Image (cartoon, rainbow, N blue to C red):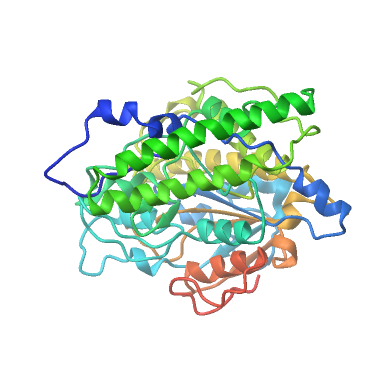
Length: 451
């Protein structure tokens, strides 16, 4: 986890200090716990299958006239952009009319990409600054904390993306880059940076897994991992004495992660789950790159390495060039279409490609067996949306939202539902309750959105 500097103290820490500290080791440290086959244990004990939440972020809005179904109720003929979802439409729900009021301009002026992205999962008003950051906990982290409190010992959450970028500096009209490159927030000043290298993700999830290792070998490995954490904790304590108040707070949150690793290391070894081959690094083929990341989400759910994940297809205001599908030019610039039919056609191509990636991961999750005749789509909620409605107007009303899965019976899929004027937080509250939380509110929610 990267430490993000949000203040400007008169003193500083040298690069050498950080490299010499155990924290640099932890940053590159995979999740080292032996993987616990929680799904298998739950089924053997007659417990309910696990509940999962997966957030899929899309940048620059959507061409809504070609996205929105013309009728409510059962999904019939899908509009142009949603056509790639046809093979899995029985698993998806299109929700129209939701809004993110925390992203409304108010007195803050421009910066809609930062506001929409930063509040994508938190629905909390941001502090407009390129030095200090202020947000709320994101729904994925609220769910992750609940699952951990109920005894889940896997990785709390997984943050992935296909565009890198630092969290410091000004990235959108005076808003910190932290808001543009992160959607998962553990707290007001604690964004959770995403990993953009598939190989690093695989190593974090599955490094050291050897199903053929003997009990003696696994115990030796466990003791070695524990000794590494002991060194890191000692170095952290020494580093803490040199930090200012804000950085000490961040370091404390970081050490919470170390304590979690300690708990996870005690977990049962997994000997039956095969995560597949270790992927290459960042693939120049964008589609292959995206799908390798989505494969890792599916593998982490299949092996019960985590039950909460987020994926950013791009950063807020992404300028990716889609020449690989025949669309030249920067996505963000094209999204400022100004009513140009030629740009509408380009956006339709981009948006269809994005739905193809969603269809890919939904289809794969439909084959994850959760036991008792249920798949991961029966027990999970996949939330896919963009940070704005339209790239030209930067509107945060009527967001383009697709939900996949039945969320343990909380969602009747295969439909188009209108929820005009409801907060996106109402949908998140549905996801929270589907994961066993008893919360009756989240952010500015007015109640559970019945789907």
